[in-house]
Length: 213
Image (cartoon, rainbow, N blue to C red; front, top):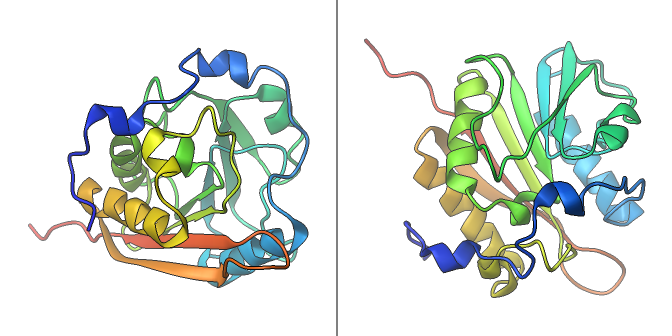
């Protein structure tokens, strides 16, 4: 079992240079293969509310949202403006470094759901970020976090490198639990690790209801 608080060295990185420098050049590529992308899309299809306001955190030039679903708005938050400008599903975007400022620049309850795709391993303050996601998502709204076994190794936090699939799921589950405003936290493995392509892992939670009173 992973318990918090984790020591600061758990979130050290091989490359501690400014993230703005690392993400300065746009990377208009996909970071998981087509089968894994399809699994992310199917998970979104099953989880995200059609017509709702969606927050795509640590976003890029593609969001993997189901093409047949229409949302009220899709707001992307990421590090490279050219990537965000190229994303056809975004109705708005924000350039924002969560490692410098884990507080999101959005209003309380502004979104019906949020997602993070193949990027949670880069967060140096994951509990703070996930707690604030709970602030901007309405009660009951889902958070969908997906990841694979691929990453930019020099920017992934140290503890991520010491874990694999199931252990990484337990780590991300612990982030949501420690944040304190998520319920029904659970893991899923849409594509298990093995031959034939990239594995895909997921951790999901729902924004806890506001306390009575």
